[in-house]
Amino acid sequence: MLHRLPGGLAALAISFAIALPTAPAAAQPAATPASVARHYAALVHANYEDTLAAARTMQKAIAAFIAAPSAQTQAEARQAWRAAREFYGQTEAFRFYGGPIDDDRGPEGRLNAWPMDESYVDYVEGQPDAGLINNRQQPLTKKALTELNERGGEENIATGWHAIEFMLWGQDLSDAGPGDRSFEDFIDGKRPNADRRRTYLRLITEILIDDLTTLVRAWAPGVKNNYRAAFERGGQESLRKMLVGLGSLSRGELAGERLEVALASQDQEDEHSCFSDNTHRDAVTNALGIENVWLGRYRRADGRVLQGPSLRDLVAAKDAALAERTTAQIRRSVRATEAIQAPFDREILGGADAPGRQRVQTAIDSLTQQSKDLVDAAAAIGITQLTLVQP
Image (cartoon, rainbow, N blue to C red; front, side):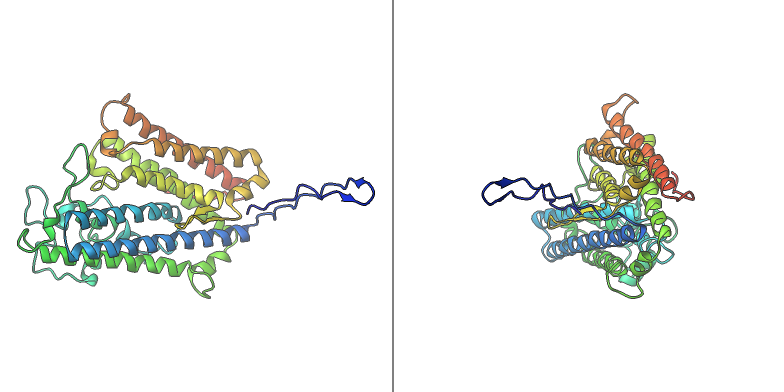
């Protein structure tokens, strides 16, 4: 934490001034594995709390859209989705180590799975009757949709951020912008099965809220037997999990699955948020989430900054140069993702010398180097068995 340190004491005047010695600066408490794990748990909880609050705001906007579909209410629901994604994207740094989001029972597959076969859910170009929505024999309930998610294939995505995104934007058939689903798709008499489309959107939003609520509870403070309580007692193993999350998101997921795959295929279907053209922001928020954990810092929705003992502090105590190098590399990755321009599906087109492709490649290269630095950082604090998710 930041403290204002006294620069010295005022001179004492009796009959003449007496210069007093400068007070010594108060030393920062040394970071320990326990303090770093505790602060990480607080940071995770705060980020999930902000995500849940933003998702509830989105839910209200979606409810208003469902109640009175119009271009205005649709635009407001879309904007609320984008705003909530800003917080969720940062939580991706809390994955890949079997925590509450992605253990055997975790909701990650319901929350953020992609790419999505749109025709599994609703009509697409050339298939007007496709999807669960247009099959009136298929019951629409939260239980049914949860069970249908990824049934029969990983791209058979029925729930989560990207299913909601598809319902709000529709297919992205434009070279210059996002999808342009008409609000009339949700008005009876304007489009077949509009009633089921409204029900579907309401239910998958509720499922998203339910899943985010379980994550907030798993990391809530002061609960005797939740995941956070065990994590805070985990010592070196908790540090290993933190670094696995950062390294795996850096290389295997963000640099690999989310950027490198799309760059190689030049296929719009391989971008993360393809319906809304929000992929460039996904990359930035993912990179920022890594930096948050490394620095032990998170800016909350209300502007307050949560700051505390960090992995950087632990590494700096063992190898100051390595800590500085890793910090600088992580910052370069954030800047590199910020340089990627929208729409992402245009950035990935062209030859190797195309400016957009070079911007994406710069981010990939920076994130790849960052993952190597994080492995070195782990070794510096005694963690040598660091198995990362690979692309």
